[in-house]
Length: 160
Image (cartoon, rainbow, N blue to C red; front, side, top):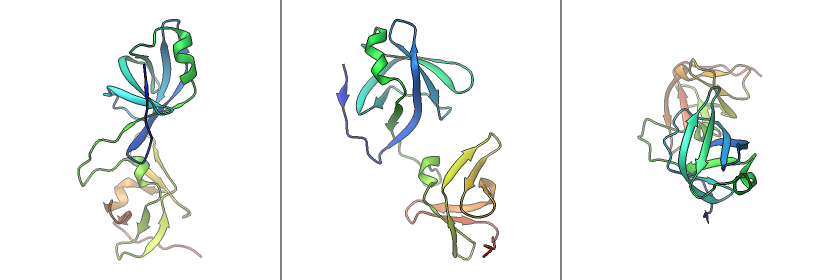
């Protein structure tokens, strides 16, 4: 029915299950990403093959897993994080979750802060730091996944 797998840094959280839906093994899930093109996901280390996904409104979906046919089968997965294996990204792509912990640097390379959270309110990503202001993604000149640095287009003066 499901195989346990060690969840490591090669995985990304894509949502959280909310509650069972109906009596035939469906589960309601809150999605963190728009892309729902997954064949397999993991919950508590259990590999689950997706039979069907029905997209609702407000980033919600109803999911049916293969071989889970009753409410009793699915209830143990309620209120759990759902993860999947990260896909290989291009050099100019990064997962939002991987931005957390990156150093934020001025154009001259001087470090000014560290990303503590990333928000997407629909008009673009917003980086949260310990600065007195948040940083819009459009202010980012480039990022380096290897050195874990984000270089800004314009200098930010950190107040003391």
